[in-house]
Structures are given as structure tokens and as C-alpha cells.
Image (cartoon, rainbow, N blue to C red; front, side, top):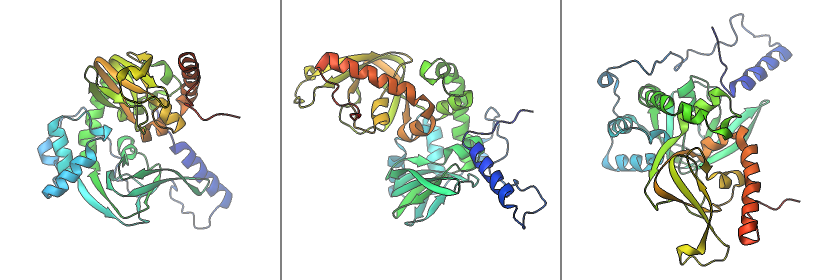
Length: 343
């Protein structure tokens, strides 16, 4: 039997083992030290098995105001993008409101996963413990979601999420999440595995990491001429073209935005190519705009998933920045400061 240790769990296990061997605690029980409390999410789940959805459906009644707030909070959650209307209705029915206080731990690293959370309002910090020290690695500001990985892969929580203000969350229980989201993702995997496998810039990822990319991407369709991203906007997503063609344009700094011809076309992206990564890599506003040429279908990944899953691809993306700079120098006589100057 082959056992695969999920990414991120190896370091946690190694650190724990070293500490036990180093300190040899007197109260170390004879039973298996690594047996956690009775798991709430370790049972096997076969997304291909048919279930009686009506019997397992969970409904939390909501007021009209709650329903409206919930729909607004969920509208940009990529995990929900590929659900059909009936599946989405079941998800919204099953979600429940959870109020949190400043300083409250919503989830703790190492715990079993019980719920997936969508932020309604409030700010939250993300802490990851390494060598016994918790380090803040990111934050959420009144939007976003977290907690999906532990439910998808039956692994302990990979981080601690702490509220830094009073706020409200919408929770989705493990059973509903796995019955609808995981089953839907299994279908999506079958659809996109070969496409993701064929992308050169993802070759540095392990097979299991590429599957996680499939799990967190959402599909977006744009009509001819529709703007996908706008120069100067803050970045929240990364895009891979599945079909169609995307035109990338840029306006010279200081150019008045009065006409489309104020923008110069600098590139076109077709199937298998990506865009939108520059602002995420440099942590700066969008350096260019992107528009659909004809009908375009893109795979989109939000910034949190991008940072979490595509770290190994960063070197390739940084090399591409150098290519962008060469193009801009040729077009404008300057690199437009798309990256911070280096010493």
C-alpha cells in the first residue's frame, strides 16, 4: 500500500518527532503518540458513489437580510464558480452564520477540519507555526475564504486563523462540503487534469500539487471586447487561457485615459498561456489591461491560492518579468517601473 504525506504535513511531523526525541517527556504514554483524537474527517469518501442527496441535505433557516449578505459574500468564491444553480442553492441553505470576537481563533494549526469558512466581514491574520514559533504569513480583509484544504485532503489544519477585529463568517459543514464541493471537484479534475499537465510553467510542480491547482481554479467566460483586468487595479486573481485569445495593453504613465488608442498592445495570450501574475509576484497594482478577443474562457485562481500553491513556479514567472521589461523598453523607451529598481 502506498501512503502519500500531504505537502506541508511532512515538516510538522518531523518537527514534532525531533522534539519528542530531544526532550523524552516523562508523561509520554505507551500508546501511539501520533494517534490524534478521534478524527472528524478521516473517513474515506468516494465522489463517484451516488448518494441520496435529499437525506443528507442540511438546511439552516435565514432571514432575507442574511441570505442577501451570504450571496454577496459568496459571489467571488472560486470554489463555488463551477456549481450549478441547484448545487449552489444547497450550499447556501447549509451555511450558517458564525460571529467572532477580536482575538478569537477560528481554526488552529494541527486540528482536524470541521468547517469551510467564507468571510462576511472582519479582518483575520494567518499564522503558521515553524520550530515552535508562530509567524504571520498573510491576512484577510473583509473578504475571502479559508479551511478548504483540510476538508479536501483529510489533513490537519495547515495554519491558524485569528480574528483581528469583531466579524462574521459563514460556515459550511464538512459533510455538505465533501458531498457537493469535493464531488464537483472530482468531475473538474477529470476535465482539467490533462490540460493542467500540459502547461510548461507548471512542470516544476509535483503531480499532487498540480491536482491541488485543479481543485482551486474556477472557470470564467468573457465576451468579445470585455475587460478581464484593468491597468492600475489591485490584483486578486491569476488567469490561464483555456480557449480564445486575450489582448494585453498598456498605457504610458501620465497618459490621459480618454481614448482606447492611448493604450499600446504589448502581447496576446492564447490557450495554455497565462496573465495577471505580474501584480501578484511584485505586489503592485496591475501593470496592464487585458481584453477578450472573441469569446474567451479562462481558468482563474485567487491570490491566496496563488501564493500557497504556485511558489515553485515563481522563478519561471520572475524570468518572464525580464522579458516584459525588454518589450516595454522597446515600445516606450522605459520599463514603466513594473518592478522595484534593484541595487
